[in-house]
Length: 210
Image (cartoon, rainbow, N blue to C red):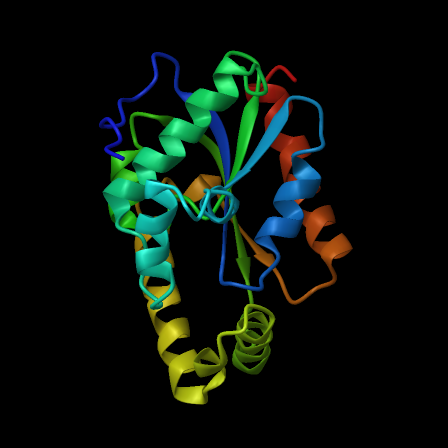
């Protein structure tokens, strides 16, 4: 299935971005924020997981993920863009009124550049785990949950952490520093949510009519 090239919308999507390594709680926080009036949570990982495995797109994505590879940036953005158009047609997402809460996208600098004309980024939350041992435990737990036993090895985890931090800080540098907030993801989910909500109460009334 050949997807048409993604074209930026007429109205930029007001967005809140969630960054964090696997297991940092992006999905949990995104789902909770998505329940707030006027907010729509979209997880790139969920979009991929819900693709029919027997379909052409599902097979193409599985061809990468099943061997531990990342889905190419251009294909990722096209699949994500198609999903947003479907949400618009179904009126689950209204660009004039709603704020997107995105996790898993943009994943790297190239995706951030591709989406520069699409996203009006209001705030970025980086769910960070500064304790290296805790970060490794989170990655190991995530690998066991997804039955990727090779990813539980210490050398593999160390490489994944290095790749994650390299990509994340490079991507964050693309955005203005004043919209990036680091949140200690080693806290309980409720404490993390509190930090996020406290920041949102400072900025959303000024920028968004919820």
